[in-house]
Image (cartoon, rainbow, N blue to C red; front, side, top):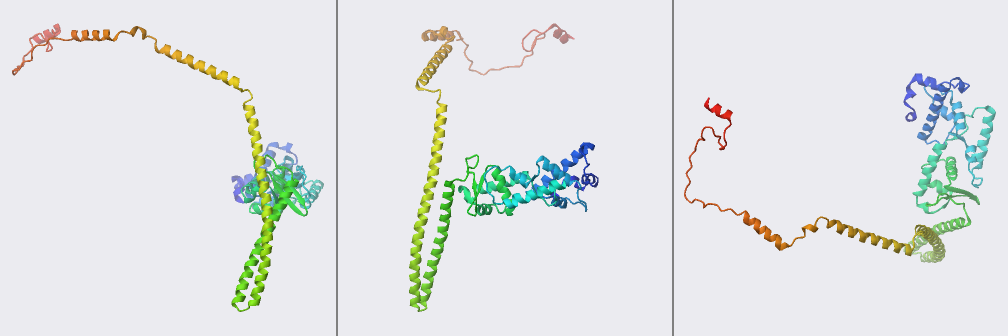
Length: 414
């Protein structure tokens, strides 16, 4: 509970203002009125999400928001304002938005009772403390969770189910039956399910993957549903017959060990009758399963043909402005441009090289002449030892045999 409360919940001064009653008119102090309304509206929605409340009552809110023995005095005004804005809805108003032809299952609980609450509310001017109000934002989130639960279940390939099977899938999310019916109605508003009651049985059809909204329950859906019911019934009876046959075999063995041969023979005679029943049940089950398999294959074929049609339409649209003559013309133009580009490249590659096209023999003769000019006669290298002695450079000359500057000479004689 405390986790859904904001930090200022522990501020006595702030909460004293928020727990006070609203002014008779918003015009008296619109700023404080709007501030207080925004606080409680946000807190009620946040609290409903935290607690998983699809519906709330004024009495429940007063109890949940009791602080240090005090209840918020303006919650009745807040509920009225939230009803006006659509943040809360009466169940009758919620169901008024459902235009599908669903029949009367749940009508007594979800329509008659809310209408009585509504009349009392109009007469009293204030919401009845025990009247339940739908929290649309939370209900929408819960409905999405239930739908995803169905999609991830083994029954996701079965579009038409009975209400009990659907509730069994999501019982951990929505344990209450009345709340579960609200979730189904929200899914109906979202065009994700279609509801029907027939022969005392409540049926739920889910939208299948790839479709934007559910289609009405038709004769084909009902026929497949009946076939699946028969398959389930035959499977249960077949399993029961097999168990009975096994039991009779064990009894015959026991009687024979006990020396009661007549009783053992009677058990075997009964087992033969059971085996005939098993054979008949198995034949019927095989026939129904074969029909269901053919229906499934037909549905697959229909989807494949539909995909082919979409593909053909897409190809036709893509090839609308394309024909053989136009394609050949484009190919010829491409080839022409490629040839032109090759010619341009060859021309650019030959720029500045025409004057360099000289005979190779002439170039070799010129190279030999250059090599002859560079040949210099050098003296013979002495073979004896070479004695060198250090010599001082003459006065007025630098060590590198260059003439010294006048300043350098004056420095030497000083």
